[in-house]
Image (cartoon, rainbow, N blue to C red; front, side):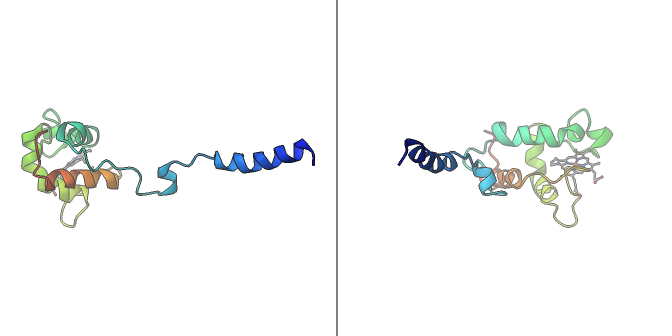
Length: 122
Ligand code: HEC
């Protein structure tokens, strides 16, 4: 047998094993979701900043957020049940974020984990 033949066999074994599959593409929908380090400063506050504060900041609430302020820990604490219901699109609540796609499952889970762990200011 020629060396080329063995080379081809070796390559046919090696090349497919090098195909990269991320965890996300293998398991769509249950992509890596950090459910352990769910802190207010690290996850909850940034999530609200990017998805909600364009309407619910101190400055914008009266203009576009129906007077509801979701900026800062104490405001989020007061509103936590309503936030949970709106981001889950539960019946009888206005679905939030308004006029935008639903938050990712992971983000909703993280908010619930934070609430269920006693809504710490961490
Ligand atoms: C484009 C502006 C806008 C964005 C972005 C937005 N909201 Fe709202 N939100 C509103 C308005 C306006 C209301 C008043 C009710 C209505 O018009 O639907 C409201 C109402 C609410 C209420 C009270 C709803 C009820 O039924 O009692 C909560 C809680 C809330 N928003 C949370 C959020 C959260 C959490 C986000 C981000 C995930 C968010 N909102 C993003 C504009 C917005």
